Each structure stands twice: as structure tokens, then as C-alpha cells.
Length: 310
Length: 301
Image (cartoon, rainbow over all chains, first blue to last red; front, side):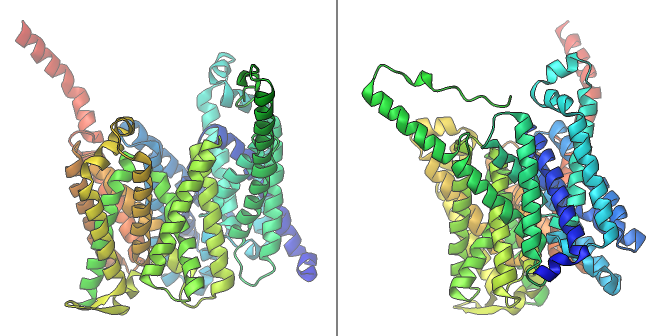
């Protein structure tokens, strides 16, 4: 294990999954408050045909082209979901389920054809399904790092605007913040995080990197700022730990281990979290019961109302 | 029966049972629950395999029902504890699925079960694994299991047709007249689980979502009547299965992927052309309406 840690390639891969996890954790908070957690799942599945087409067109496993292909096909998926929802009586979750599975089916069709025709050159393409961070070469790592840092910068620089956009869209509009543009930028960074994550985590489990850290962070704080920071830490940490564990075995996929690492963090947050954690709630309930027994006149209204957001 | 015949029969059974179950998924607005359960039954199958060391129908079904119900329970529990519904679905299914994949990668080896098979299905191998059924002779295992599941689903739905109808359209009314809504919910989740696991061999974890949701959504655009929607949805499922198979043979590609894609085409056609809810008819209607209003005014005056 020490040997694999010392190799410079592994260090770069670890760094990239760390930064990726942080970026995904931050965007995940935005998605959580937009109530679009599963949208990320649909979009990551919808990216598969784009990856395969990009490979078939260029004939090389160039990460940048694949990211462009993935982004195009994920955006087509997002647009279709919006169109189906707005112009028929199909609900959004049904539309998401359809786009997710039909695009994935198309991706598998294309993947099978490419696998058959392209020879041995494409062996890495299957990695896009479960993720294989170890297979990344130096150039891929740099591309990923640059894009993930870009996402982090976009979120931190315009933090106040994001907050307004999420929690008080009317006020934001009053200040002259175009919700159309904010929505477009939000969609763009969401898709960007998803497509750069696909190489490391795979299309199926990418959604977990966005959802789980944000939900875990929710158990610790009521402040949006703290939630974003915590979520970035949880995401980065699980990216790092998951990748480390997956290097222990030969051919172990990265994605599932990252997901398990963040699920462990989630379970810890669920039990010990300072807001709505199981333990704290049980204690509160007990003290509240005691108070009721000792002094029946004290009412439940003394419990502070739980506010959503900040 | 011929090799192609068995494949088409198996695929049609998938289309039929998924199409029927899917109708209720759409009406109960639980499309993404289907996505979640289709992922988590993998864990049930792997666990059943690790315990019994064989890939056997009944064991897999029991494993699938347990994990399916576990998924539904956990999602419900997190939701009741203040996590948003779709976020709690996301947390539960990715975690259980990841555990399943890791178990396959580390414990199972590549013996009988691998992740690729679980995700994409191997309908091309279905006709080779046969079993002896009295009166019918040799029948592929997967086909037999699908037929049995379809029978169970049909019996459960037809026997309590009115109850399903009321709980799907108006759960509050159903509860007020004493229908056990919660029990029906979990019975329904079990039906989704067994349908998913029976279709697993044929189409895999993700394409089963396409077979569950898409034909039903297409049928939803054609009719307002539950019984017609059930028939249409089943028919769309079978059509997609046939079309998908022949396209896959023509292009020499993944049969399950192509079947999922075919459901998408069926939906697209419905979405554009359906007389009542289609995009095209709405577009035409928008321009026709002024004339009708004029005629009405004429009629009044």
C-alpha cells in the first residue's frame, strides 16, 4: 500500500478525487435546495451516449473531448426533461426516469457497437460505467483538476448571489439578478461536475457524490454557508478515502468505494449530528418528557421551531 | 420453440409485466422509486447468492423482496425525519447499490454473476438455461420465472382492482373508507421488486427502469381510463421488446439497450402524436380554437 501511495501518479489521482469530491459536495448543496437531487442522477446517466459518441468520432480516449460529448448529451437530456414536463401531463420524476433509462440504453447500444468495431484500443471505455480513477493518465488528471477548481471558484465567488437565488428568488429578481441566467449557470456547473466526475466515479454512482455529502452536512448546521463548507469537506474526504481503498485491490472500481465512504460519514452524521441527529433528538425528547412530568403546564411550544435554511 | 422464439417470448413477458406494474408507478408518482428499487435488488441477489452459492429463482425473489422493502422503508424513514424525498431516495439506493457492486467485485469473483451482466442483462443466454416443467417440457428458467411473476402480478391487481384504483388516484379517500393504504403500498413495492428481479436476467438493472416507466408514461398520454391504460402500456411494452430485438439483431448490438431505446421511441411518438395530450395536436389546437369560438359566437347570435 505504501508503494502505491508513493507513486506520483497515485498522488495526482488522489488529489483529483479530493478536489472533485469538494466540487461535487458544494454543487450538491445547490442541487439539494433546488430540490433536484435526483436530477443529477438522470443527467449522469444521460451523459453516457455522449461519451461513447465522442470516442467514436475522435477515435482516441481524450478526456476533454469526452467531457464535451458528455456535457452535450447531458444537456440534451436536461432539455428533454424540461420539455416533457412543461408540455405534457407527465410529471418531472417520470420524465427523469425515462430520460435516464432510455439514454443509458442508447449509450449501452453505442458502447457495444464501438467495442465490437474499434478493437482493443477502447478497453478503458467500460470504466465510465463504474469509474476507474487509477486508469487516469496525467493529462486527464490536470483537465479534471482545472475544471473542478473552476466549479469551486464559480460557487465561492458568487456565493451571495447563489444564496439569494436559492432562498429568495423574488428578492433576487428585485435586485436585478436574472433568474434565467442563474438557472443557466447552475445547470452548466451541475453538468460540468457530473461529466468530470464520470471518469472517476462512473455514470451510475456519480449522483451519490452530489447527494450524500449535502444531506450529511444538513445534520450539522442550519446555516447555508456552513452546510456548503461541511459538504465540501465530506465530499473531498470520501473521495480521498474511497480512492485509497480501491487501490488496495486489483481492478476494484473506485466509484462504489467512494460512495461507501460517504455513506459511512452520512451514518455518523445521522446519529451524532448536532441538528436533527438521532442522538440529540432522543436526548431532547427525554428532557422534554421529564419536564412534562415535573411540570405539566410547560408546553411543547417552548421547543424552538426548526428553521429551514438560513 | 426456436431460439429467437424464446427470446421474443421472454422479452414480451418483461414488457407485459413491467408495463402493467409501471402504470401504477406513474399514477402513484413513484417513478424514481422504481429506479431506486431496480438498483437495490442487485444487493438482494448478491446476498442470496453469497448465502446459497447458487443463482436460483426462489432465493433471488426472496432476496429481492427483502431489499425492495428495505429500500422503501428506509426512504420513508429518512423522509419522515426531514430529508427531502428525492434526496433520501438518492442516499439509500446509491449506498445499497454500491454495497452490491463491492460484494460482487470482492467476494463473488467472476463466477456466475458479474456487474456487467447485472447492469445490462444477458437475454441472449436465456434460452440456454432450461428447466423441466411438467406438461410444457423444457422451458428456460428466466422465462418460467417471468411467467410466474406476471401471473402473480395479474392476480394481485385484478383481485383488488378497485382498491388499487382508489389508492392510486385518491389516497385520502381510500384511507377514509377504510382501505389499508399502507399495506397496499408495501404490497405494491414487493410487486415492483419481484417484477424487477424477474426481468433482471433479461434486461438488467437500469434498462428495467425504461421498461417500467416509459411504456406506462406513453400510455398515460393516450387515455384517461385506467383499464385502457393498463392494456396499452402492456402492449407498448411488448411492441418495444419486439422492435428492440430486431433492431439489435440488425445492428448487432446489445438487445437490452436497444429495447430500452425502443421504449423511448414509442414514448416520443406518443408525445408528439397523441390526439389529446400530444405536442402536435396542442399546436394545431392552439390555431383552431379561435375558429371554434367564432362558430360558437355565431351559434349564439
